Image 1 (tube, one colour):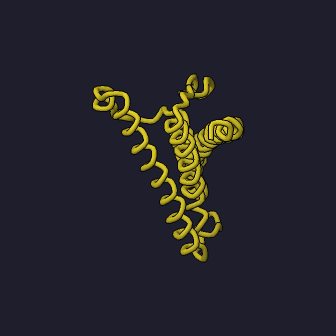
Image 2 (tube, helix red, strand yellow; image 1 turned 90 degrees about the vertical axis):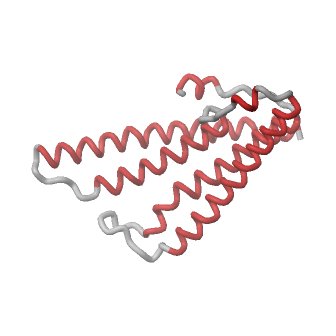
Length: 173
């Protein structure tokens, strides 16, 4: 298992960094779109109708991608005070339980978001003209990535592999 993890870790690192870059670009794009909406509303007196739904869609992407990277790099919010008071073997069990639940959560989010996307595919997002199911793409991708990254960490904890968070991600956090 250790060799398998060493083999896939670089690929997962690339996915993680790429997700972080896409999330950052999405945040910049959303900021520019909202800025254009404000300029259009108050200066041109003609607010673009597409700006709000598109900025919300971009926000969904960067939130879900950022959450997945946060799971992989263990920079998400946590309440660890009880964990640190326990002996090491109990800490490991608590970590495995927590990561296992995160894996299940990610799988559930991806699965049920896929059902929602399929169920709303025939509807249209009025201003953008996209199928309604596209609203759930960020949750599908984010859920799958959360499950994969949590499973990676679960296996690392189970085999006793101590992997520090990626330096680039730590500096960005």
